[in-house]
Image (cartoon, rainbow, N blue to C red; front, side, top):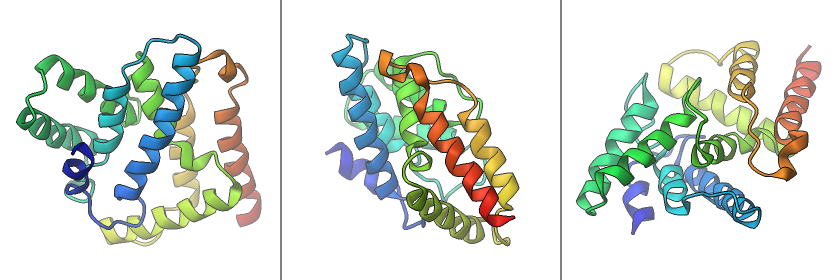
Length: 190
């Protein structure tokens, strides 16, 4: 039910589409499992719903996309009789995907890590996602390509806060892999 409700708020953008939301949800739920293994408290339902709605309506506004996604999520969850407290928790979690967004709760950290997971995979996946973001930028903003240096700097800013959820994350491999992909990308474009 939640999947259908969230899906109708996504368009066929090259990157920020419902397929991306599903990938974020799936990766986030893997992180939830890891947290439970280490007895790190986490609300699975908050994470799942936040992941499904985090980019809802992405093509409808130019700024404050996270706030707009929260408005959509709030409207839909109220129809399903979720409590105001639960909705507020999902909202706080979605806002973690905003640049400079809070990373205080486990749910917020999980969603941020899952949303950025497309940058820490293989270098081929990284390039594929970069291409989709470039296409989307042209489509949404009617401009040429998002300048590579500006795009990489933006990704770096998103990666700046350390995300450590479990003892497995001590080495911060997540950030290291994404940075390695960015560095390789810059070596290749020079």
